[in-house]
Length: 256
Ligand SMILES: Nc1ncnc2c1ncn2[C@@H]1O[C@H](COP(=O)(O)OP(=O)(O)OP(=O)(O)O)[C@@H](O)[C@H]1O
Ligand SMILES: [Mg+2]
Image (cartoon, rainbow, N blue to C red; front, side, top):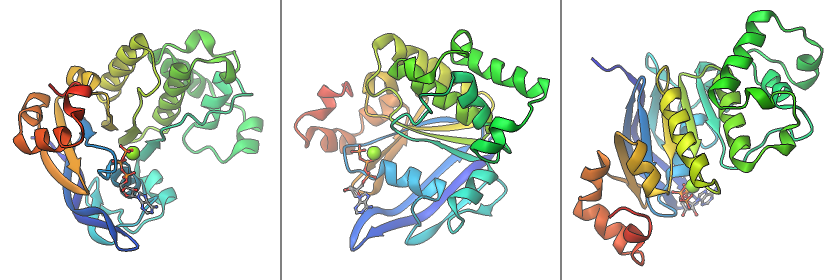
């Protein structure tokens, strides 16, 4: 029986009278890789912001794990409960090596200075190498992060979030700006990552979603429109309307 890890109940977010989210009900199971799609301004990023504590819901509740109410917690405390967010633009330290960036992200790290002076035990070092191996960056561990390609920086950030050992990882538009090969590899990395944690991915690239998604949730104008396999949501008349109503985005985005 699947176990629910995230329960978003009737959540609304009101930005000075504008409803970015309107009574959204959204659930995820442990070990699930879920894709969240929808036209620009649908509320996808806002939903991630609510789950990680960057934005407070105006109404509704957000329960995580064993029913912990994270809807009113600070982002810091939510992260400690096991929710990690990888933001859209890479924010690695370019002048540090790939390995040093990873050291900074080790769970329990207490900031830059602490991380620089602390001696790592061999288990921690092994783990850093193992996680870098998962994103094909082990050979670049000693090189400056600034020399990585855009795609590799995104993978380094995913690796850094994995180091925090989150139960739920939130990823916003991971393949934007990536080459075709990097996109494929990113999909495999996300599938692999979701083997021992839940991963929620916002993505516009429908070819990518089609290839890697089992279950897709569609948001539109702050409301949850439908959920299902890529084929199911792609054949849903309301989804087709929403995408076609916006200048044929469905075809443009590969929904059909
Ligand atoms: N801080 C804010 N203040 C006011 N309005 C906001 C704020 N943040 C987001 N919005 C609005 O809320 C709506 C939803 O925004 P959101 O960024 O969640 O959409 P999205 O689905 O992520 O879109 P995109 O695909 O373009 O990234 C948009 O109309 C946006 O302009
Ligand atoms: Mg967004």
